[in-house]
Amino acid sequence: MTEIVISGTGLYTPPQSISNAELVAAFNQYVDDFNRDHAAAIEAGEVTALQHSSEEFIVKASGIRSRYVVDKSGILDPRRMVPRIPERGNDEPSVQCEMAVAAAREAMAQAGKSAADIDAVIVAASNMQRPYPAMAVEIQAALGIEGFGFDMNVACSSATFGIQQARDAVANGSARCVLMVNPEICSGHLNFRDRDSHFIFGDVCTAVIVERGNSATSGDTYRILDSKLQTIYSNNIRNNFGFLNRGDESGIGQPDKLFVQEGRKVFKEVCPTVARQMSAQLESLDIAPTQLRRMWLHQANLSMNQLIARKVLGREATAEEAPTILDEYANTSSAGSVIAFHKHRADLAPGDIGVLCSFGAGYSIGSVVLEKR
Ligand code: CO8
Image 1 (cartoon, helix red, strand yellow):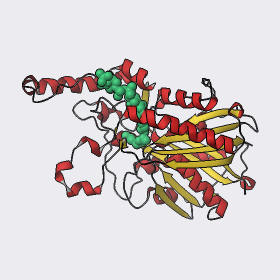
Image 2 (cartoon, helix red, strand yellow):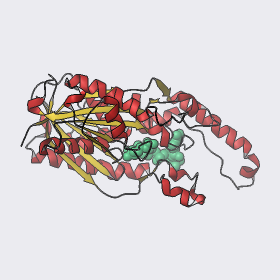
Image 3 (spheres, protein in one colour):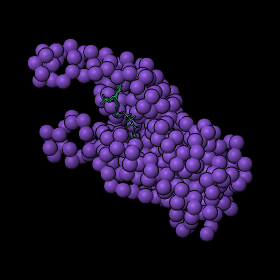
Image 4 (tube, protein in one colour):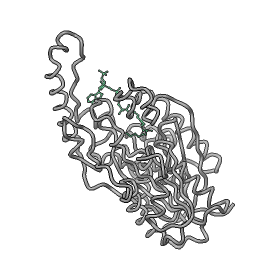
Protein backbone atom coordinates (compact mmCIF):
# COMPACT_ATOMS: atom_id res chain seq x y z
CA MET A 1 0.00 0.00 0.00
CA THR A 2 1.16 3.56 -0.71
CA GLU A 3 2.93 5.10 2.27
CA ILE A 4 0.76 7.86 3.77
CA VAL A 5 2.15 10.23 6.38
CA ILE A 6 1.27 13.01 8.76
CA SER A 7 3.74 15.73 7.85
CA GLY A 8 2.62 18.69 9.96
CA THR A 9 0.38 19.79 12.80
CA GLY A 10 -0.83 23.17 14.03
CA LEU A 11 -2.42 24.51 17.19
CA TYR A 12 -4.43 27.68 17.79
CA THR A 13 -4.92 28.44 21.49
CA PRO A 14 -7.37 31.26 22.36
CA PRO A 15 -5.63 34.02 24.36
CA GLN A 16 -8.03 33.91 27.36
CA SER A 17 -7.81 31.24 30.05
CA ILE A 18 -10.10 30.51 33.03
CA SER A 19 -8.68 28.87 36.17
CA ASN A 20 -10.77 26.49 38.28
CA ALA A 21 -10.80 29.16 41.03
CA GLU A 22 -12.31 31.77 38.69
CA LEU A 23 -14.86 29.33 37.25
CA VAL A 24 -15.96 28.06 40.67
CA ALA A 25 -16.24 31.62 42.07
CA ALA A 26 -18.62 32.61 39.22
CA PHE A 27 -20.62 29.38 39.56
CA ASN A 28 -20.96 29.72 43.33
CA GLN A 29 -22.10 33.34 42.97
CA TYR A 30 -24.77 32.11 40.52
CA VAL A 31 -25.84 29.45 43.07
CA ASP A 32 -26.04 31.99 45.92
CA ASP A 33 -28.10 34.39 43.77
CA PHE A 34 -30.42 31.56 42.67
CA ASN A 35 -30.95 30.25 46.21
CA ARG A 36 -31.60 33.78 47.52
CA ASP A 37 -34.07 34.59 44.70
CA HIS A 38 -35.91 31.28 45.22
CA ALA A 39 -35.67 31.17 49.04
CA ALA A 40 -39.45 30.96 49.60
CA ALA A 41 -39.95 28.19 47.01
CA ILE A 42 -36.95 26.29 48.39
CA GLU A 43 -38.37 26.63 51.91
CA ALA A 44 -41.76 25.33 50.64
CA GLY A 45 -40.06 22.35 48.98
CA GLU A 46 -41.14 23.48 45.49
CA VAL A 47 -37.62 24.17 44.22
CA THR A 48 -34.41 22.30 45.03
CA ALA A 49 -31.60 24.47 46.38
CA LEU A 50 -28.48 24.46 44.19
CA GLN A 51 -25.12 23.33 45.61
CA HIS A 52 -21.70 24.95 45.33
CA SER A 53 -19.02 23.60 43.00
CA SER A 54 -15.48 23.07 44.29
CA GLU A 55 -11.93 23.31 42.92
CA GLU A 56 -10.89 20.23 44.90
CA PHE A 57 -13.65 18.12 43.32
CA ILE A 58 -12.78 19.26 39.80
CA VAL A 59 -9.07 18.42 40.11
CA LYS A 60 -9.73 15.11 41.87
CA ALA A 61 -12.51 13.93 39.50
CA SER A 62 -11.00 15.11 36.23
CA GLY A 63 -7.40 16.40 36.54
CA ILE A 64 -8.50 19.69 34.92
CA ARG A 65 -6.98 22.92 36.32
CA SER A 66 -7.81 25.52 33.63
CA ARG A 67 -9.28 25.94 30.15
CA TYR A 68 -8.83 28.36 27.23
CA VAL A 69 -11.98 30.03 25.91
CA VAL A 70 -12.91 32.39 23.08
CA ASP A 71 -14.62 34.72 25.59
CA LYS A 72 -13.99 34.75 29.31
CA SER A 73 -16.13 37.67 30.52
CA GLY A 74 -19.51 36.30 29.36
CA ILE A 75 -18.83 32.89 30.92
CA LEU A 76 -17.76 34.37 34.27
CA ASP A 77 -20.69 36.79 34.50
CA PRO A 78 -23.03 35.00 36.99
CA ARG A 79 -26.07 36.60 35.34
CA ARG A 80 -25.06 35.30 31.90
CA MET A 81 -22.68 32.27 31.97
CA VAL A 82 -22.54 32.07 28.18
CA PRO A 83 -19.60 33.32 26.08
CA ARG A 84 -20.13 36.67 24.33
CA ILE A 85 -19.57 35.99 20.65
CA PRO A 86 -21.13 38.79 18.58
CA GLU A 87 -22.72 37.57 15.35
CA ARG A 88 -20.70 38.47 12.28
CA GLY A 89 -21.88 39.57 8.86
CA ASN A 90 -21.85 37.07 5.98
CA ASP A 91 -18.97 38.94 4.39
CA GLU A 92 -16.75 38.60 7.50
CA PRO A 93 -14.74 35.45 8.41
CA SER A 94 -16.59 33.24 10.86
CA VAL A 95 -15.04 32.53 14.30
CA GLN A 96 -14.35 28.86 13.51
CA CYS A 97 -12.78 29.87 10.19
CA GLU A 98 -10.41 32.31 11.92
CA MET A 99 -9.28 29.69 14.44
CA ALA A 100 -8.87 27.07 11.74
CA VAL A 101 -6.83 29.34 9.47
CA ALA A 102 -4.39 30.10 12.32
CA ALA A 103 -3.90 26.39 13.17
CA ALA A 104 -3.75 25.45 9.46
CA ARG A 105 -1.00 27.97 8.73
CA GLU A 106 1.23 26.44 11.41
CA ALA A 107 0.56 22.90 10.12
CA MET A 108 1.23 23.95 6.52
CA ALA A 109 4.49 25.68 7.53
CA GLN A 110 5.63 22.57 9.43
CA ALA A 111 4.84 20.36 6.42
CA GLY A 112 6.40 22.87 4.01
CA LYS A 113 3.15 23.06 2.02
CA SER A 114 1.59 26.04 0.25
CA ALA A 115 -2.10 26.33 -0.65
CA ALA A 116 -1.25 25.08 -4.15
CA ASP A 117 0.03 21.77 -2.72
CA ILE A 118 -3.26 21.00 -0.90
CA ASP A 119 -6.43 19.92 -2.65
CA ALA A 120 -8.85 18.92 0.13
CA VAL A 121 -9.96 20.45 3.44
CA ILE A 122 -11.81 18.43 6.08
CA VAL A 123 -13.33 20.16 9.10
CA ALA A 124 -13.82 17.49 11.76
CA ALA A 125 -15.36 18.80 14.99
CA SER A 126 -18.09 18.27 17.60
CA ASN A 127 -20.15 21.25 16.53
CA MET A 128 -20.19 23.50 13.50
CA GLN A 129 -21.28 27.07 14.13
CA ARG A 130 -23.69 26.78 11.16
CA PRO A 131 -24.98 23.96 8.97
CA TYR A 132 -23.99 25.49 5.59
CA PRO A 133 -22.11 26.52 3.60
CA ALA A 134 -19.71 23.97 5.06
CA MET A 135 -17.07 25.52 7.34
CA ALA A 136 -14.48 23.62 5.29
CA VAL A 137 -15.41 25.49 2.11
CA GLU A 138 -15.01 28.87 3.85
CA ILE A 139 -11.63 27.82 5.30
CA GLN A 140 -10.56 26.49 1.90
CA ALA A 141 -11.37 29.89 0.35
CA ALA A 142 -9.65 31.82 3.17
CA LEU A 143 -6.44 29.84 2.58
CA GLY A 144 -6.68 29.98 -1.23
CA ILE A 145 -6.87 26.19 -1.61
CA GLU A 146 -8.36 24.75 -4.81
CA GLY A 147 -10.20 21.43 -4.73
CA PHE A 148 -12.92 20.39 -2.31
CA GLY A 149 -13.87 20.60 1.36
CA PHE A 150 -16.46 19.09 3.66
CA ASP A 151 -17.47 19.04 7.33
CA MET A 152 -17.85 15.95 9.47
CA ASN A 153 -18.81 15.33 13.09
CA VAL A 154 -18.09 12.28 15.22
CA ALA A 155 -17.93 14.29 18.49
CA CYS A 156 -14.67 13.75 20.42
CA SER A 157 -13.46 11.23 17.82
CA SER A 158 -13.84 13.62 14.89
CA ALA A 159 -10.08 14.11 14.40
CA THR A 160 -9.10 10.44 14.22
CA PHE A 161 -12.07 9.75 11.94
CA GLY A 162 -10.94 12.78 9.88
CA ILE A 163 -7.39 11.43 9.65
CA GLN A 164 -8.75 8.17 8.26
CA GLN A 165 -10.85 10.06 5.65
CA ALA A 166 -7.73 12.04 4.70
CA ARG A 167 -5.62 8.90 4.50
CA ASP A 168 -8.23 7.15 2.33
CA ALA A 169 -8.48 10.18 0.00
CA VAL A 170 -4.71 10.32 -0.48
CA ALA A 171 -4.45 6.53 -0.86
CA ASN A 172 -7.15 6.34 -3.52
CA GLY A 173 -5.87 9.41 -5.36
CA SER A 174 -8.87 11.71 -4.86
CA ALA A 175 -6.47 14.16 -3.17
CA ARG A 176 -2.66 14.61 -3.12
CA CYS A 177 -2.53 16.33 0.25
CA VAL A 178 -5.31 16.96 2.79
CA LEU A 179 -5.66 19.60 5.49
CA MET A 180 -7.78 18.31 8.40
CA VAL A 181 -8.80 20.90 11.03
CA ASN A 182 -10.61 20.68 14.39
CA PRO A 183 -12.01 24.08 15.44
CA GLU A 184 -13.67 23.27 18.77
CA ILE A 185 -15.73 26.01 20.47
CA CYS A 186 -16.94 23.74 23.28
CA SER A 187 -17.88 26.74 25.47
CA GLY A 188 -20.68 27.44 22.96
CA HIS A 189 -22.52 24.25 23.84
CA LEU A 190 -21.58 23.80 27.49
CA ASN A 191 -24.10 24.59 30.25
CA PHE A 192 -21.99 26.67 32.67
CA ARG A 193 -24.91 26.54 35.17
CA ASP A 194 -24.63 22.75 35.46
CA ARG A 195 -22.47 21.75 38.44
CA ASP A 196 -21.78 18.29 37.00
CA SER A 197 -20.24 19.53 33.77
CA HIS A 198 -19.44 23.28 33.96
CA PHE A 199 -15.71 22.58 34.35
CA ILE A 200 -15.21 19.96 31.65
CA PHE A 201 -14.55 21.76 28.35
CA GLY A 202 -12.34 24.37 26.68
CA ASP A 203 -11.90 25.95 23.24
CA VAL A 204 -9.03 25.39 20.78
CA CYS A 205 -8.25 24.46 17.18
CA THR A 206 -5.82 21.86 15.83
CA ALA A 207 -4.77 21.07 12.26
CA VAL A 208 -3.11 18.06 10.60
CA ILE A 209 -1.55 17.65 7.14
CA VAL A 210 -1.83 14.19 5.52
CA GLU A 211 -0.01 13.35 2.28
CA ARG A 212 1.94 10.63 0.45
CA GLY A 213 5.32 9.77 1.93
CA ASN A 214 7.03 10.41 -1.39
CA SER A 215 5.77 14.01 -1.55
CA ALA A 216 6.65 14.86 2.09
CA THR A 217 9.55 17.27 2.47
CA SER A 218 9.33 17.93 6.23
CA GLY A 219 12.01 16.37 8.44
CA ASP A 220 9.37 15.43 11.03
CA THR A 221 6.92 12.97 9.47
CA TYR A 222 4.92 10.03 10.82
CA ARG A 223 3.98 7.00 8.76
CA ILE A 224 0.32 5.97 9.30
CA LEU A 225 0.70 2.25 9.91
CA ASP A 226 -3.00 1.67 10.57
CA SER A 227 -6.20 3.40 11.58
CA LYS A 228 -9.18 1.73 13.20
CA LEU A 229 -12.61 3.26 13.79
CA GLN A 230 -15.48 1.95 15.87
CA THR A 231 -18.92 3.32 16.78
CA ILE A 232 -21.39 1.88 19.30
CA TYR A 233 -24.71 3.67 19.83
CA SER A 234 -25.18 5.17 23.31
CA ASN A 235 -27.31 7.94 24.82
CA ASN A 236 -24.86 8.51 27.67
CA ILE A 237 -23.30 11.56 26.00
CA ARG A 238 -25.82 13.62 24.12
CA ASN A 239 -26.67 17.07 22.73
CA ASN A 240 -30.20 17.53 21.37
CA PHE A 241 -29.66 21.00 19.92
CA GLY A 242 -30.88 21.26 16.34
CA PHE A 243 -33.14 23.13 13.95
CA LEU A 244 -36.08 20.80 14.68
CA ASN A 245 -36.12 22.24 18.24
CA ARG A 246 -38.11 25.22 16.91
CA GLY A 247 -40.90 22.81 15.96
CA ASP A 248 -41.70 22.24 19.64
CA GLU A 249 -41.54 25.34 21.83
CA SER A 250 -41.85 23.31 25.05
CA GLY A 251 -38.27 22.06 24.60
CA ILE A 252 -36.62 25.43 24.07
CA GLY A 253 -34.23 26.21 26.92
CA GLN A 254 -34.14 22.62 28.20
CA PRO A 255 -30.71 21.51 29.51
CA ASP A 256 -30.47 18.63 27.02
CA LYS A 257 -30.19 21.14 24.18
CA LEU A 258 -26.62 21.55 25.44
CA PHE A 259 -24.01 18.92 26.42
CA VAL A 260 -25.34 16.29 28.87
CA GLN A 261 -23.78 13.02 29.97
CA GLU A 262 -23.84 10.16 32.44
CA GLY A 263 -20.16 10.62 33.33
CA ARG A 264 -19.79 7.51 35.49
CA LYS A 265 -21.36 5.22 32.87
CA VAL A 266 -19.20 6.75 30.14
CA PHE A 267 -16.10 6.14 32.23
CA LYS A 268 -17.00 2.50 32.95
CA GLU A 269 -18.17 1.58 29.45
CA VAL A 270 -15.67 3.46 27.30
CA CYS A 271 -12.32 2.70 29.02
CA PRO A 272 -12.30 -1.11 28.52
CA THR A 273 -13.59 -0.80 24.95
CA VAL A 274 -10.85 1.66 24.04
CA ALA A 275 -8.13 -0.48 25.63
CA ARG A 276 -9.44 -3.59 23.81
CA GLN A 277 -9.45 -1.79 20.47
CA MET A 278 -5.88 -0.50 20.90
CA SER A 279 -4.55 -3.85 22.14
CA ALA A 280 -6.19 -5.81 19.29
CA GLN A 281 -4.94 -3.30 16.74
CA LEU A 282 -1.35 -3.49 18.01
CA GLU A 283 -1.53 -7.28 18.07
CA SER A 284 -2.76 -7.35 14.47
CA LEU A 285 0.26 -5.25 13.51
CA ASP A 286 2.64 -7.50 15.50
CA ILE A 287 3.55 -4.59 17.77
CA ALA A 288 4.14 -5.62 21.39
CA PRO A 289 3.07 -3.18 24.15
CA THR A 290 6.78 -2.92 25.06
CA GLN A 291 7.43 -1.40 21.62
CA LEU A 292 4.89 1.38 22.20
CA ARG A 293 6.77 4.60 22.88
CA ARG A 294 3.79 6.95 23.19
CA MET A 295 0.02 7.16 23.57
CA TRP A 296 -1.51 10.49 22.54
CA LEU A 297 -4.87 9.85 24.16
CA HIS A 298 -8.12 11.82 24.04
CA GLN A 299 -8.00 14.36 26.85
CA ALA A 300 -11.27 14.05 28.81
CA ASN A 301 -10.22 12.75 32.19
CA LEU A 302 -6.83 11.96 33.75
CA SER A 303 -7.99 8.78 35.53
CA MET A 304 -9.55 7.49 32.31
CA ASN A 305 -6.26 7.92 30.47
CA GLN A 306 -4.26 6.29 33.27
CA LEU A 307 -6.65 3.33 33.28
CA ILE A 308 -6.59 2.87 29.48
CA ALA A 309 -2.78 3.15 29.35
CA ARG A 310 -2.48 0.64 32.22
CA LYS A 311 -4.73 -1.85 30.42
CA VAL A 312 -2.75 -1.54 27.18
CA LEU A 313 0.74 -1.62 28.72
CA GLY A 314 0.00 -4.04 31.57
CA ARG A 315 1.54 -1.57 34.01
CA GLU A 316 1.32 2.12 34.99
CA ALA A 317 2.28 4.45 32.13
CA THR A 318 4.82 7.18 32.77
CA ALA A 319 3.88 10.81 32.11
CA GLU A 320 6.19 10.63 29.09
CA GLU A 321 4.41 7.57 27.64
CA ALA A 322 0.90 9.01 28.02
CA PRO A 323 1.29 12.80 28.09
CA THR A 324 -1.39 14.99 29.65
CA ILE A 325 -2.54 18.36 28.35
CA LEU A 326 -6.04 18.39 29.87
CA ASP A 327 -4.74 19.98 33.05
CA GLU A 328 -4.14 23.20 31.07
CA TYR A 329 -6.64 22.84 28.17
CA ALA A 330 -9.49 20.77 29.77
CA ASN A 331 -11.46 18.55 27.37
CA THR A 332 -11.25 20.16 23.93
CA SER A 333 -13.25 17.34 22.32
CA SER A 334 -11.71 16.15 19.04
CA ALA A 335 -8.64 18.40 19.36
CA GLY A 336 -7.31 16.90 22.64
CA SER A 337 -5.32 13.95 21.30
CA VAL A 338 -3.96 16.12 18.46
CA ILE A 339 -2.76 18.76 20.98
CA ALA A 340 -0.95 15.97 22.86
CA PHE A 341 0.62 14.78 19.58
CA HIS A 342 1.54 18.34 18.57
CA LYS A 343 3.27 19.12 21.87
CA HIS A 344 4.76 15.76 22.82
CA ARG A 345 6.62 14.17 19.94
CA ALA A 346 9.87 16.15 19.52
CA ASP A 347 11.89 13.51 21.40
CA LEU A 348 10.84 10.56 19.20
CA ALA A 349 13.50 8.84 17.08
CA PRO A 350 13.00 7.19 13.65
CA GLY A 351 11.22 3.86 14.12
CA ASP A 352 9.49 4.92 17.35
CA ILE A 353 5.83 3.93 17.47
CA GLY A 354 2.90 5.75 19.04
CA VAL A 355 -0.90 5.63 18.97
CA LEU A 356 -3.12 8.66 18.58
CA CYS A 357 -6.45 7.64 20.09
CA SER A 358 -9.76 9.39 20.68
CA PHE A 359 -13.05 8.35 22.25
CA GLY A 360 -16.33 10.04 23.06
CA ALA A 361 -19.96 10.53 22.15
CA GLY A 362 -21.56 8.01 19.82
CA TYR A 363 -19.86 6.13 21.39
CA SER A 364 -17.02 6.60 18.95
CA ILE A 365 -13.42 5.35 19.13
CA GLY A 366 -10.61 6.04 16.68
CA SER A 367 -7.01 4.83 16.97
CA VAL A 368 -4.22 5.70 14.54
CA VAL A 369 -0.89 3.89 14.82
CA LEU A 370 2.04 6.10 13.80
CA GLU A 371 5.73 5.42 13.21
CA LYS A 372 8.29 8.21 13.21
CA ARG A 373 10.13 8.15 9.83
N1 CO8 B 1 -18.27 20.27 42.60
C1 CO8 B 1 -18.44 19.53 43.72
N2 CO8 B 1 -19.09 18.34 43.73
C2 CO8 B 1 -19.58 17.88 42.57
C3 CO8 B 1 -19.46 18.61 41.36
C4 CO8 B 1 -18.78 19.86 41.40
N3 CO8 B 1 -18.60 20.61 40.31
N4 CO8 B 1 -20.06 17.93 40.36
C5 CO8 B 1 -20.55 16.80 40.91
N5 CO8 B 1 -20.27 16.78 42.24
C6 CO8 B 1 -20.65 15.74 43.22
C7 CO8 B 1 -21.84 14.94 42.75
O1 CO8 B 1 -23.04 15.56 43.15
C8 CO8 B 1 -21.64 13.63 43.46
O2 CO8 B 1 -22.09 13.72 44.78
P1 CO8 B 1 -22.77 12.43 45.51
O3 CO8 B 1 -21.69 11.38 45.54
O4 CO8 B 1 -23.15 12.97 46.83
O5 CO8 B 1 -23.92 12.03 44.61
C9 CO8 B 1 -20.12 13.47 43.51
O6 CO8 B 1 -19.59 14.80 43.33
C10 CO8 B 1 -19.59 12.57 42.45
O7 CO8 B 1 -20.13 12.94 41.17
P2 CO8 B 1 -19.89 12.11 39.88
O8 CO8 B 1 -20.22 10.68 40.10
O9 CO8 B 1 -20.57 12.79 38.70
O10 CO8 B 1 -18.30 12.33 39.71
P3 CO8 B 1 -17.24 11.48 38.92
O11 CO8 B 1 -16.20 11.07 39.87
O12 CO8 B 1 -17.85 10.45 38.04
O13 CO8 B 1 -16.60 12.60 37.95
C11 CO8 B 1 -16.67 13.28 35.64
C12 CO8 B 1 -17.39 13.28 36.99
C13 CO8 B 1 -15.43 14.15 35.76
C14 CO8 B 1 -17.59 13.87 34.60
C15 CO8 B 1 -16.25 11.85 35.25
O14 CO8 B 1 -17.33 10.97 35.42
C16 CO8 B 1 -15.76 11.73 33.82
O15 CO8 B 1 -14.84 12.39 33.40
N6 CO8 B 1 -16.35 10.80 33.06
C17 CO8 B 1 -15.97 10.56 31.66
C18 CO8 B 1 -16.52 11.65 30.87
C19 CO8 B 1 -16.14 11.60 29.44
O16 CO8 B 1 -15.10 11.17 29.02
N7 CO8 B 1 -17.02 12.12 28.65
C20 CO8 B 1 -16.77 12.27 27.28
C21 CO8 B 1 -17.37 13.59 26.94
S1 CO8 B 1 -16.67 14.23 25.55
C22 CO8 B 1 -17.64 13.91 24.17
O17 CO8 B 1 -17.57 12.93 23.49
C23 CO8 B 1 -18.62 14.95 23.85
C24 CO8 B 1 -18.06 15.85 22.82
C25 CO8 B 1 -18.94 17.04 22.67
C26 CO8 B 1 -18.29 18.30 23.15
C27 CO8 B 1 -19.27 19.05 23.98
C28 CO8 B 1 -18.77 20.45 24.33
C29 CO8 B 1 -19.63 21.17 25.35
